[in-house]
Length: 272
Image 1: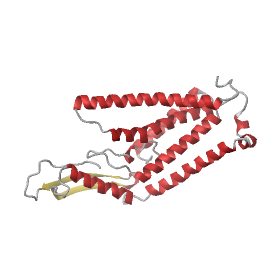
Image 2 (image 1 turned 90 degrees about the horizontal axis):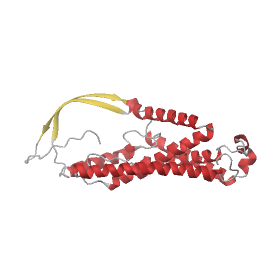
Image 3 (image 1 turned 180 degrees about the horizontal axis):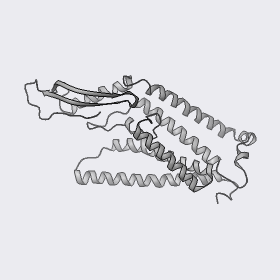
Image 4 (image 1 turned 90 degrees about the vertical axis):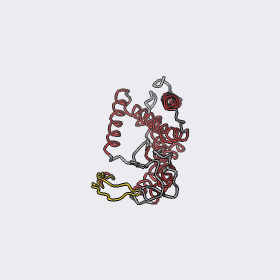
């Protein structure tokens, strides 16, 4: 049907892309439902709907749509299922290597979970500015790939070369305008995100998160007035890795109680 239909090919391709996306969303939602059931049944803890909504709606679903559209784009360009799957697997492997090696930071992450944090204390407020720019970048890129996947899909009445000609594109001024707008949006958001990330660890948007974390830490342990144990005699060895934006710390310290009351618990947090 796809190859023989002289008209309406874009509708057929779009319908297939949406069908695959919906199927994958149903699988993910089912997995989340099972997770919540186990959380309530085995551990008796109340689920936090806001955390699931953030991770599903803001991160996971746009990421699924991106990869579905990317697969459709590869299929349109290669005109072969095997080649499309091969390209998608190769892209996914490079993406995973980038995630684990650290060279793919928030600027290139399709699902930047570190921008929407659920910590050991409580669900912290997201990094609003970089998160919005990243979502705009991913969303605009997804729509660009979607337009290309639909437009470049092979048809029997037209060749790809003829469809990319000046006359063919001139007859679709609205589509070309939308494509240019999306490309400009993706480029602009990418540049702004790049500048934001290059502000370093002392950036104001990072300090806001650190201040919020410290406040919630004190509230969590029942002491908003900062009556927490003091740390003395610190003997630490710190190794810095600037290129990877991380450090490793090892050593000993002494915890001292300088208040008139005993602490019921001693808060120890490994990472914000």
